[in-house]
Image 1 (cartoon, rainbow, N blue to C red):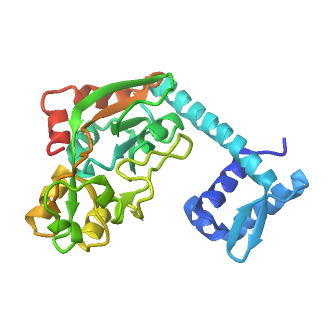
Image 2 (image 1 turned 180 degrees about the horizontal axis):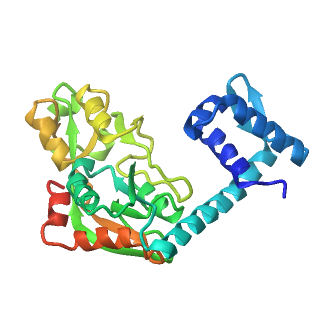
Image 3 (image 1 turned 180 degrees about the vertical axis):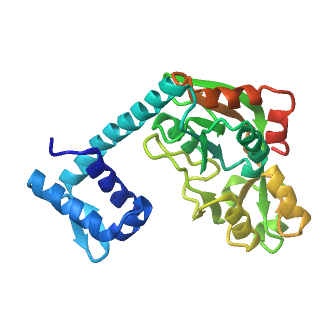
Amino acid sequence: MKISLDALQVLDAIERHGSFTAAAAALHRVPSALSHAVAKFESDLGLALFIREGRRATLTPAGRTLLEDGRDLLRAADELERRVQRIATGWEAELRIALDMILPAERLLPLIGRFYAADHGTQIRLSYEVLGGSWDALVTGRADLVIGAPGDLPARSGISTRTLMHDARLLFMVAPNHPLAAWDGPVPAAELRRHRAVAIADTSRELIARNAGLLEGQDALRVPDMQNKAAAQAAGLGVGHLPRWLAEREAGAGRLIEKPLAEPRPPMPLHMAWRTRNTGKALAWFLAEMEKTGEIEALTAGL
């Protein structure tokens, strides 16, 4: 066969990172090795896969089609490796946990510490997701367990869930010198739309991205994470909602103040979710620990 999993991994890395150099770093290889691999792949197939413009590499239509279908093969191969590992020992080689950015990752560290202390041999990989990205990570196989996935479940079968809480609330915060800080009474939507929002982009790759908290036509500054969102709002660059644990910290330091909205965001449920067919012992360990008294409360305090 002319198409190999290694070649598809190279294409995937180049497309995700935007250049041969960045992809090589991500794959722990030298750029010349990637260039040679792509040149050989193109020669074997008899077609061009990339349009090269300086250091940037953009997929051709044929390359795009190959990669989109090839990612299904990569996911299937990855799942096969993991399934064989589970069959052989029962313990996953790696457990990937995706945490929604509404939760601070440090709250999960004591649980991970207890898992390491038991010396099961499974490696843990933590990642952050935003909005629908938690569900997307589960659906696309980027995560084995998601914690804090907000809102409604996607219309997909094969997902098991446990509700962490039904009423997580975000507080609307502005800098003390922002024009809305002086607004008398609840801020109406028409006035809110006139001011830039600070938002974290949904991390979904395949599911439809969600845009919670943004009004139609509202300008938005998009930042990479919750800490930078709070910092941008404190700098007066925009307004937006923050989880209570972070909003109260910023308010206590005098950097932000809470303002009521005429149309406040309703509370939302947070879920823990995993793929039903995943029967690995490491996943089962975390699910069992999360059932113990006080674990969920410690994770969701201040939400």
